[in-house]
Length: 206
Image (spheres, rainbow, N blue to C red):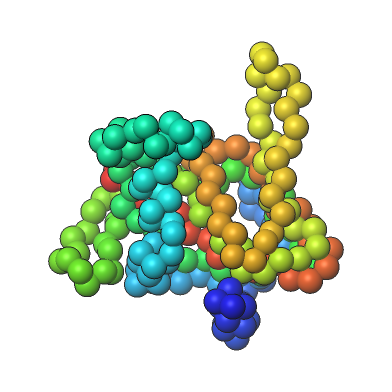
């Protein structure tokens, strides 16, 4: 499969192990990582998978609501959901490998200002001042343990909300808000196998 091919290739890259002692106000993270700025890969991931269609056309929670919406309503709903009109994915590509015993403690993902330049040759690309609003995680492998767990804030209606656990599945993409709207979350300890994750971010105009 494509995910298996990616994981095999990425294993040959010079991964860096994160420091065992985090900086002030940083969560404890124990994993191996690789980072590269690659607008062509980000554009390929956006254009040739279902991500672009999902992000730009589907926003309603109920399918009936989606079918009854006009194209203009769909576009406006997408802008409200994603924090602006989606431009594509952040070219800052991060690869994470979690082996048995490795994890990522509770933390928030920050929003960042970026310069967005699509690599697509279909149109002349112009740089746009952008900002990231949602984290994208693509799971390239499955493993035992390693769930991404979110902890919703308590409300008047629900004073003790249950955590939301997402188990890694090959080829699964997970989008979650970051910045001011980020939900505290963590990557649970991997107890068997390896968890390979590709990370990028959704970019909207600044």
